[in-house]
Image 1 (cartoon, rainbow over the protein chains, first blue to last red):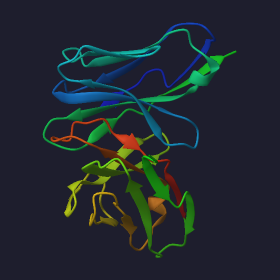
Image 2 (cartoon, chains in turn red, blue):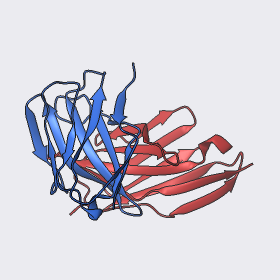
Image 3 (cartoon, chains in turn brown, cyan):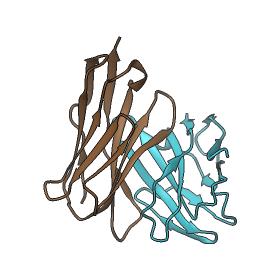
Image 4 (tube, each protein chain N blue to C red):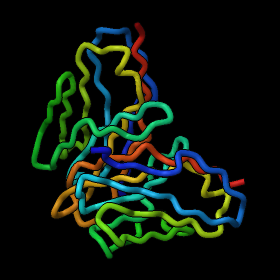
Length: 112
Length: 114
């Protein structure tokens, strides 16, 4: 059974710093991995989708990497801003079924 | 382009009542999904649909029903509401021939059963 873990559960960093969020998964036979952000009381906003054949994806100040063999993905946020404060979720999709398995998220706070 | 919309935003139900959560997407996506999010537990898939007229169970389908009569709409029906169904419900959609597309989520419905 696929399990997705995100550590730490919460992270606070000063504004302007670069930071890395971690996501690990137990079964490397994934189809793709998606990073989301969730603001309090809101829905999920898709940030980046990495297909299993890709090693990384970039969007603006965000860069996500995928290492299937080690069961890890990282989300790198450059030059953090207070508006980046949110909970960040990763989710993996396995081939052969429609289920996304979600981690429980990292709650990020950027301190002005 | 409104994306994925959900109604209502909030609802309180008494035990044993029933209700339908509405979900509509205007992106012409073929895949649609229903998830529930419980505190500290991560999102779990309830039901999904790969196209109009086709639905299938996810990880936690008990106590729920769905239908997909059009590409745009994917309502979730709760029959005989129970306290265990207190949760935040999210609808999502994606476009892909094999279901591997990026999923887009609605704003959620916060449901309390008392």
